Amino acid sequence: MPPRDLDAIKRIAIHEGVARGASSVRVADAHIDSLARARMIASFDRGDLATWGYDATYAQRATEPSDVLPGARSVLCVALPYARPRPHERRGRGRVSNYAWSADYHARMRTLLHGVACAIEAAAGERCTAIVCDTAPLAERAYAAHAGVGWIGKHTNLIAKDAGSFVFLGEIVTTLALPPDAPLRTSCGACTRCVGACPTGALRGDYTIDATRCISDLTQRTGEIPRALRPLVGTWVWGCDLCQTACPPTQRAGEDASLENEPLDGDIAAPDLLTLLRLRSGEFKRRYGRTAMGWRGAAVLRRNAAVALGNELDRAHVPSLIEALERDPHPMVRAHAAWALGRIASPPALLALRTRAARELDGGAVAEIRAALEPFDRGEALAEA
Ligand code: B12
Ligand code: SF4
Ligand code: SF4
Image (cartoon, rainbow, N blue to C red; front, side, top):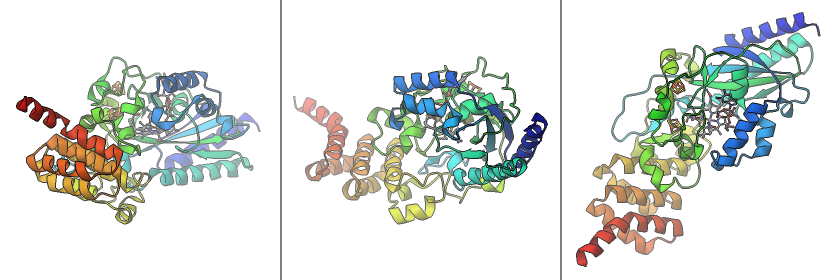
């Protein structure tokens, strides 16, 4: 196909993408990205992504677009903005990351990409595209940076030129050799605001992250949240936005008013923690099934609510935490409720822990109850001595 026609196809794709809500649509060459591969392997070797089970094979596949589509020559990268104003903080309410307030972005992104891919294939007269968003192995940020959609910041997110970092990324890998765009020349410079804003010290400041410390990872994992990190999670119950809300280019970008980013309801961004602590499967599916919070199940959200309540240190929450300690069907939730009660440490909280210690059958929950009581038992032993 002559280059002139490829230029026209690229223009059609860009027009289609922007018309469908993307803030940016640009093209990268579908080369093997050796730099990104080396950075990913180094990150996996350090254990930064330990919870995700990524390895050198994943890094290899993610930096070779022909793994997604044999014969790939170009990657069309799009950024879809999603920032919305955050509700005021209120006691007893959890914090949910901006990206999960509206209907799950994967479906929206796929619809957008599908429309653009159809336009490309109609113009090319052949099947020549594959769609990627989050699921197929692809270093999405690295290719978006090559295409000049934005640059990768010290918080490791891609900062789109005008929309900031609150953008979802999606790609169309194609066998067409579309004319590539140039990367941006922008960088973070001397700024380190995201590093200072991160409560868990997950960001090193050298454009790498220890994701095992990131609240986004901690609130999405299915196992326990490490005890030492629980106090640092604060009241986040799903994801975390702190490094991005501190980021000057993201602040300057402001919000996106499109209807698709409208929060599903008034509570979704700041759910009532006691309601979340009692959330069961049916209600979970009804409330969260359509959102990006809908894939880990109700027990993970109950666990996160227990941690948030432990961090609020409000004695009024003790009866609900005792109920979770005694009746929650999931041992992980009982274990985190034990931790929360130990943090609050009012006389009824400690009594409930001691009573439960004699009845609890799950080893992990027993260990948490013992750990919660340990400072007080030690104190009593010292007083007796
Ligand atoms: C696993 C994962 C996570 C993990 C790990 C995050 C991480 N930083 O790696 C956790 C659960 C922590 C996470 C959290 C979030 N995630 Co996430 N996540 C992913 C996923 C599925 C894979 C990322 C991955 O492979 N990480 C491994 C690292 C080593 O590789 P990498 O980040 O892709 O790329 C590195 C290299 O490319 C390298 N690099 C290569 N070339 C160059 C060149 C230069 C100059 C530099 C500096 C770096 C560099 O730097 C990159 C960053 O370290 C991607 C989707 C995808 N397939 O890419 C979404 C994705 C990265 N997540 C996304 C989002 C929205 C989030 C959250 C904002 C959600 C939230 N609010 O809670 C947070 C942000 C936390 C943070 N500070 O990163 C978006 C990011 C959009 C954007 N603007 O960048 C993505 C792209 C999903 C999407 N399709 O939109 N996520
Ligand atoms: S999302 Fe939160 S915990 Fe994760 S790196 Fe950013 S500020 Fe730190
Ligand atoms: S806060 Fe500053 S250092 Fe961090 S990503 Fe934004 S511009 Fe870069």
